Length: 294
Ligand code: ZN
Ligand code: FE
Ligand code: FE
Ligand code: ZN
Image (cartoon, rainbow, N blue to C red; front, side, top):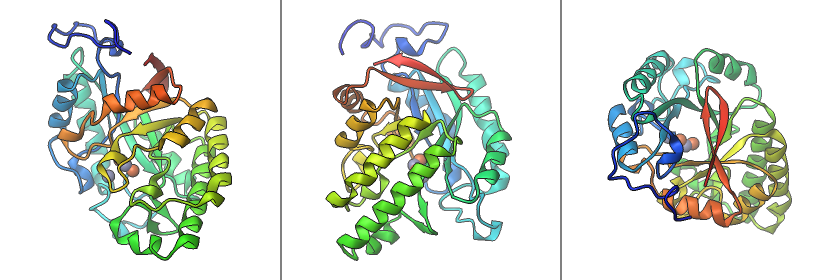
């Protein structure tokens, strides 16, 4: 893993023409902006943080507005309002332009997959020139998997925890098969507060691995979980190994909600990816993938 190519001397001046392979890490594929209502910092501070930690690219992937709910039911502490979306796109495109030759800024979005609303989501995604679209499963049957207010659900006991994981797995399989996403985000999100499925879930995990591999979607290896009660990357080492073995490509991501979190734990992520058997990660531009060797 060490060598002149993978560990460049960052004190050297940057090349005029940008090449992700010449930087320490190719891309942070999952970052937010203050527009979502639960992130802090200015857009340009996220980009400067990406430059400072030696990233070749940063994908800005804020939460897509609640397209499956009527406007009055949108929770603006979880996603930007619909009228903000075009301004978000313009701001990221301007950052992309302004930083050209210095760091690559990619226009992305983190979109919830909600069964029954695939057409609405496809319409939203077709409207803007996204480089990368992340698919997430935060909402299961109207409740939020990763919100602290949901902890009492998990505390109902083993049977309920398994039921949640089973339902979650069904939703992830459907998201993978939808063809709407480039990358599937935090693939084992229900573990966030430390509630793990029992052995009985093993079969469902095999379904997830098979569907993800068959879909061609990339999977994010995210350091976000390291900053959560579970204290583990998404996906955890076992699931990551099975995904890589099944042929699922990886991207690296921090899920930064503050500039200081950009590139968080990327050294660990690369080590985990290599330990799981991965040999490359992907960078998406215009929703097309470019492999970059690890
Ligand atoms: Zn968020
Ligand atoms: Fe998410
Ligand atoms: Fe996110
Ligand atoms: Zn996220």
